[in-house]
Length: 248
Image (cartoon, rainbow, N blue to C red; front, side, top):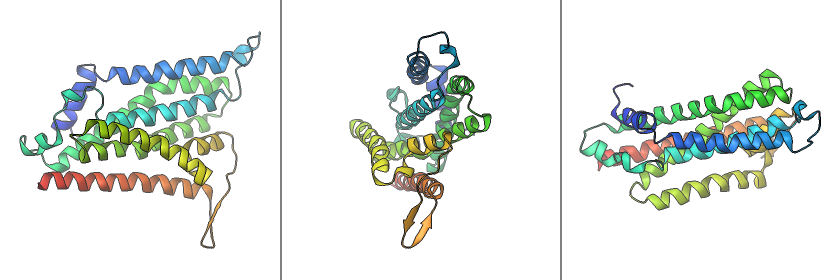
């Protein structure tokens, strides 16, 4: 993958040139105050450093929304967009195969999500220690954050390929997509909602199962099946759009 020009371009733009540092700064500058205020506001007394039992839950939900949202925007190439070659130029002018373009995009997106988790992990681990959250729950929460960010962010790549020349349409779509999905999943069936499932996981609560066509499905099976399907459909559409671009 080191020889992949699309991956090299993304790494150079984000890290060598520093255009991606703003993304990570935004995440930390939001997460850190949320954690600070959650710790101090409940009671400013001599026991304030004992922390709140809900501190890790608040920080985990905040990190979930931030990491997934910014991953969508990174996949959509909203940061330093002028520095990226278009997919059409990669394929037609540079002779890069559509499959190589896809591998470059997906590898960089995965690296971005992992790096985002790496930056947020110290704050989350500290919050978990203050809230006396078991280590296995902290590790499970970090895995869930990676899972959700991966499932949602691939749709940023879909919009990038389908509406490459319509920047404003892409930006509007991914924002509507993300927030609508979070809200509608809570309204249709609460266990589908990532925030509700994460809170239930951390609180060791059992969510209501789903009975469909006479078959009883556990909430966890429905939840993970839905998000795996969401990410799988996004990958399939992205691969189709890349092949179509390469065939034109």
